[in-house]
Image (tube, rainbow, N blue to C red):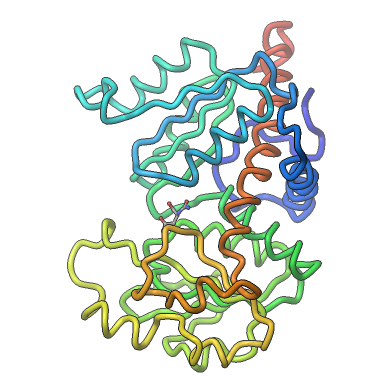
Length: 323
Ligand code: NCD
């Protein structure tokens, strides 16, 4: 059945979603958190559906999280290993998508190193597509799981002051988070060296800082980002030591934030580059492990909604009632 509270075919990004649509996905996800903590983790919500994970980039948590989410809902799941598939023989992105599409999957979860590639693919298939991260563009399920983590810990998103720190330039996580947090009424600061700040980012409505001490002052949430060496062509940071000294989160810098400020990181962490182990592993204040846990719940909600919408779309199409 088509979900009237989320009437979209795909989830390609957070940009453009309304506060009500975001809240709806978060509410649904929240129900799955309790379910995942219970003894019986199997449901048949997606029984008979096929989910394909198509990852053109390395991933540990996002891929396993989608796989687990689909399995817990009773779907059949296929993980496409891009290195061993025809892509390694030169098959194009679109050919791969069209080939997979011919096998009638219900949802394709796609990660790709190029910004925009997932949208391109979504236009060529007639199943639902979830963006599992495209280049430095968007990573919507990460922003949703971050929001769910904040909402469960703080009871709300609106009015909170969130600092997103580090390699903002290359980060799809940051971009999805800007859209989500600003849409939900939070205030967003970015803190980064000048070389890692996207141009004209202020136009989105975020405040920009190049100094951790000033930027972290009184924030409710400190979200650290990985330094994405694989996306850097040229030198963006002088050295790891210097980066850590000025932009790595440690106790001293954290002391500027609110005393109960929450520490977050999407993973994988570079300990000693952007974050000190001492704060990353702080049992009370770090929500990093919880983010991973809630990621499964968020992906269950997203797969459920999109698979339902897709079935409704295709049956309307079969009855001649729509495209
Ligand atoms: C992020 C990603 O891949 O964009 N990680 C993730 O999904 N858990 C962030 C990163 O790679 O730094």
